Length: 265
Image (tube, rainbow, N blue to C red; front, side):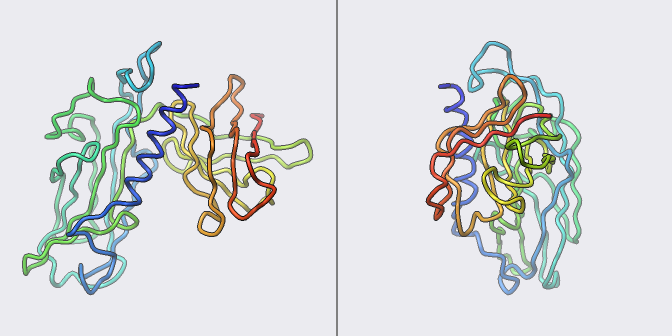
């Protein structure tokens, strides 16, 4: 269980870093400052996936990469490109030095990288250095014709690839003997959406990430008003069932320390 807890805390740390980032050059998505609004998207097969060394704790295990791919598009959703000198995608490994990955003077801009060597180029990192939970982050950087430089904040201009185990949890599950069948959908590599959180009505969807069988909740339908606290890491049991041992939902008195279990069908 110690190994589960270590990885769970590491993933929570990744989420915290992404949501709390501050930088003197970072601006909110205000078109009067950066000049225009953007949307960053990536195809569902954009990922770095592999198999960790058998018999070694995940934090120490080398990873044999089986998929390394990025297909990322930056699109303009508002504003004007009249003052744009260039737009760059910069990358960093585990929060390290930023390196320019590609640039354009027009939008939309599509960046495709289909191999690990090019994804890691100039980071000083090679495949044997990778561990489960490492993060390759991408930021959108705008340089205007007057020389001003802006970064969009994490909700608009950023994207990340987390080194992960290959995951195949999508499919049908049940919750409770009298509840309808639930279909778990993979929305990006290792990230899934369940139609509802157990003990709630069927409209309350929940999303979570699978890191080598360890499940971390990343979002749910009422996160802004009633956030979830995950007291222990979730996991995939030996029968393929999904187990969240202890969850709290803020503002719901009866939802404290409840176990939620989805049974694989």
